Image (cartoon, rainbow, N blue to C red; front, top):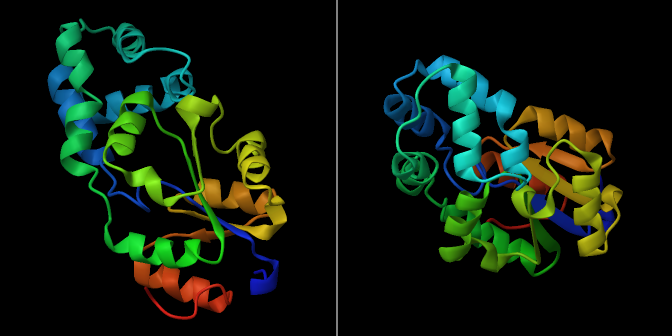
Length: 210
């Protein structure tokens, strides 16, 4: 745990931290449209998501490849285009309570978003103004890098002008928290706002809850 004097920047994940996790709703919706068992679909998506998450292929290319691997007939392209978008718009709601906290931190520290995401979700979040509160926004589909790659964290360091050792990283996925710690960041496993506030106070970077 680093002292307040050492911390110059704070990096936030998106899903599960700044917006509600829509993963369960997405799998339920997509498996219904594709007529496939949810667990089987989820497994294949995790295996095949890298290129899409780096912005190297389109949504339609991704879904046609997934359907081929699953050995099922794809529905129409019109339906495929809704799979990422509809459940996300309905369930990935902004955690508005987090942004008072972020505004307060932004007065004393540089802030950034670093997230594994896809083009459709990035567009939705940009249109609803979610990124307006941050100094830098690093999205995997735009940067071409993904967690847990060190280069992804390094790009955040470069853009913010702050060494990795002088930043805090906040994520709800223990895999990425462990990776960040390995690279020298002080990383916090996010559970809820109250727990985060306590963790930040312990580090001396937050005095009062916003």
